[in-house]
Amino acid sequence: MVNSYRIYPIIMLALLAGASLWLERITRVDEPAAAAAEQTGPDFTAEHTRVVGYGANGVQRYELFADRLTHFPQGDITRLDMPRLRMINEGRETHITARHAEVSPGGEQVDMQGEVRVRRPAVANDPALALDSETLTVWPDSHRALTDSPVQLTRGTTRADAQGMRADNLFGTLQLIGQVHVNMPRRQGPAS
Image (cartoon, rainbow, N blue to C red):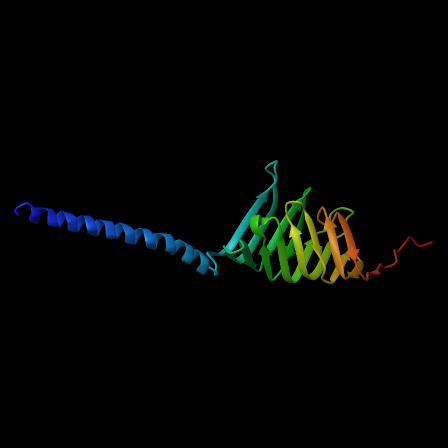
């Protein structure tokens, strides 16, 4: 009888340890799945951001600024407020602004919405270019852009209105889509 009272606390400690281990395992398995299923809001937000993209040769290709950046893990979507994209191609800069944008997973595509403005300053014999639309999808790495929204394009003194636009090499090759109306002022030649 003397030995049985010494074994009783050991049995109780073993039962308590087993119950603790069982409780820890059943709660650990359920918690992460429930937390992942409930996460529909953003996982981080940043103010006054700047993202820089470089080409394979190490040369800067673009900069993307935003007043506010919000990332949503569900779908891996990043939303931008007041985005400003500065693209550099063969020494020329093109500036694109909008009210909002969504960046696709991996960052290959930027969908800009609301008062989209594209501006490229004049150089040598190439006049300034301006494009206004409500939407524009841009692929910064491949320097491509497109929109199915109405566009107003101004290059120098020529103005064109269209139902959409496709651009390769960021306005090196431009295709206006839909009903296109172009206003080309008459060239002023030398007086005869």
